Image (tube, rainbow, N blue to C red; front, side):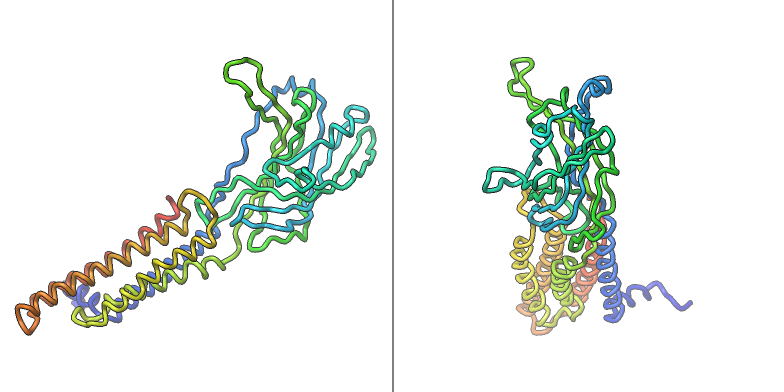
Length: 363
């Protein structure tokens, strides 16, 4: 029989075998992170809006609404700022609505301009289509969306644009729409992201003005346009994850050397402080939020495993120092104990890396 009971342990002690294990681990972690970047579902919430009873809707004045997006002049997931160039249009029966009422729309979470308005509107373009009036507004708007950065910088996002008319109640003026009313220009350009699905919801929002007095509330018609984007870029994988992994494997490299080699400590002592300082790079590119993201999780994981390596090497140095104090020569028993501890730590650390990186997809 070629393989004996000791063949596997001996093979794992071989430096070439360990290098192969490290290379396999590197490939697994790299391709798993790349796979995550393209397969994590967007977890951004779509705003909740209320719905009128169908009978109540039939008694209101219904205005069909739509949005065409020419382009995003600014598209920053990191800063949660988006500048949209598009066309908002309304269609309603002739004589059912005043142009002033229709034009009093705004967008939620949009930035105020110097004029005090939340959106720049060009003069309306009015067109008659049979018995209906089509009113179109060319708009430029800068807004924020309710983004969830749990997977940052991986995965896609849902960008929500919330159109509202606060000068009317939903019982007298109600938006109706459908997914086909949200359209995007074929030449739309968004760096590293691609739109894959569209969704439109209509209804109304309500705000209670008093918890004790019944009827003290205001409500207004609302339409939510939602666009799901997937992440196509690998720049963040290279600029953020790659340096951390390199530093971690430099620290891990010390476990491949002989336990009595004095240079082991220099690898860990050099890589770990640099990895800790890399936190400043992550903070510079991360969104300002109060919870941990995917890049935070991987960073904490690699720092934790690197500290285990540093602690192990500290333990090895202390044992060797104590052995030398009692004898000029390190005993074979002490060396075998340290080598066994080193072997166990090497494979446990790599196993933890694989398991915990895999867990990052499900957390």
